[in-house]
Length: 70
Image (cartoon, rainbow, N blue to C red; front, side, top):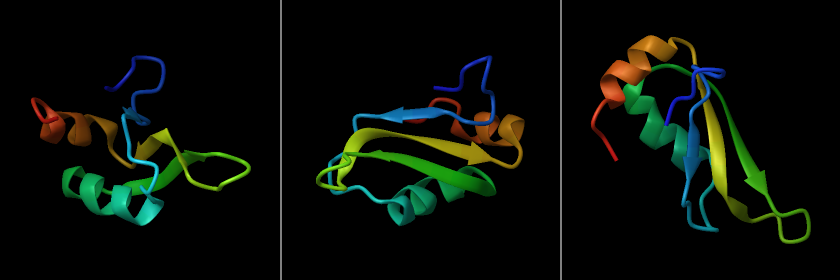
């Protein structure tokens, strides 16, 4: 989902706890150049908390390419 107040940083939820930044870059890199990935991690286990934010260089292009994808 791309929110109006953060158009270049879509929320990505429902992630497996084994998900890492490299995996997210590989998947989302198909939709455009990525400036950064912020994977929220548990401070004790350092595993994914199940959500992340991916920042695209060109949010409009990424949104157009992602349209209709799950």
